[in-house]
Amino acid sequence: MTANLLPPAPPAPYRGLRQAACCALLSFALASCATERHDRMTTGSIPSAGSAPSLSKPLDTMTGPELAMAERSMGAAYERNPKERATGLAYANILRMNGKNTQALAVMQQVVIAYPSDRAVLAAYGKAQAGAGQLEQALATITRAQTPDRPDWRLYSAEGAVLDQLGRSEEARRKYRMALESQPNEPSVLSNLGMSYVLSGDLSTAETYLRTASQQPFADSRVRQNLALVVGLQGRFAEAEQIANRELSLAQAQANVTYLRDMLAQQNAWAKLADKDGKPKQAIR
Image (cartoon, rainbow, N blue to C red; front, side, top):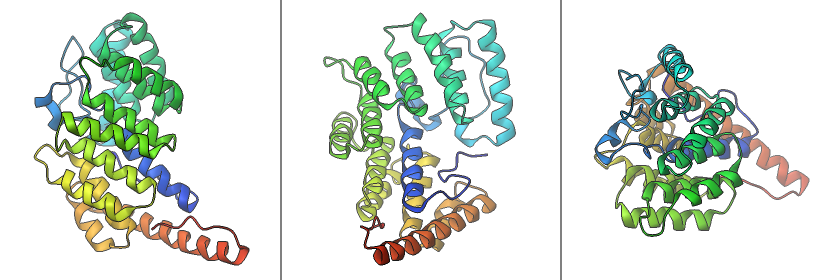
């Protein structure tokens, strides 16, 4: 099971859009903080440093059974040595991929006790806090991990993702642009910037950034899935399915497009009801 952007069941219309965008933002926040730049094509994969068991392929390309097997393997390694840095980082990453955010946070709480000044550990801890809904705490942790004399573009991007989820979009976009000043055309940052505009309903601007991101040589599957999401949200379902087909199975791509159709239909129905009730609309622009 690849990491779908869309929730498995349709929530309330506008909330569904925000949840999809927030999930996409979180999927990139600090995704490669523990890896070197030449490893970016395997963003989301297990860190190679230390004695953590190696996996055959990146996590975001694994099926459901493969992720379950990876969780069992890394969990056993973690039980043998819970203070081993690479294993703890890897195990928390897998748990997040499997939606076990509370457990991932518990693992990272143990790792950060052993490595309180390690920037990669602090970054992963902040990501775990954000995944568990502790956004203010995550922002404080990520800020603590950043150093003014040696700023890390990954941390700027992660900070932006948390700020976006807190509704502080202008601050978030400043952080993304600071990341891009340090790392021009970085696809994960461009993708987060694009999803920031999804959160505010500016789908045209979002698509511009996501298309630029998808054209970069190190763009991974999630960038193109985000592009498919934004194209679909504008009602161009055939094009969205074509983009998604490159990353997902045909059944998954069709299911995502069906979800988008249903969500937008609900959005339109809700907007009409809002007109009748005299309440302000939150329609997609």
